Amino acid sequence: MSTLKLPNTLLHDQADACLARWVAQLQPDPKPSVQVDASALLEFDSSALAVLLGLRRLVLSQGGSVQITGMPPRLSELASLYGVLDLLQQA
Image (cartoon, rainbow, N blue to C red):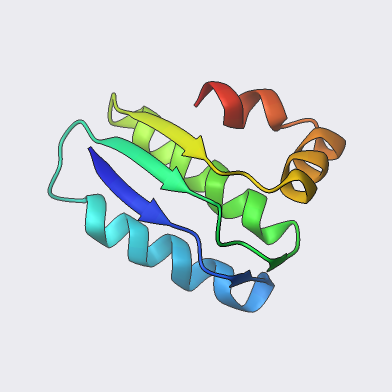
């Protein structure tokens, strides 16, 4: 299982680079099993959700699985507001 960590800050300006870094790390694995540790995330906007959903889409398309742990309450609330919390919890 690959473990990826969200940074302390994940705003719009950092989102593409964060997802690209993760995609590069996962390319060699044909059926990735990924755990994302979100516990360090302090400053974020909806781009953090876009990164998590992008990773989920990629991993699921390869037949893998994603588990998100340590999701801060504010991120859970934002995901609920956008209607994607269930997607992230069952990823």
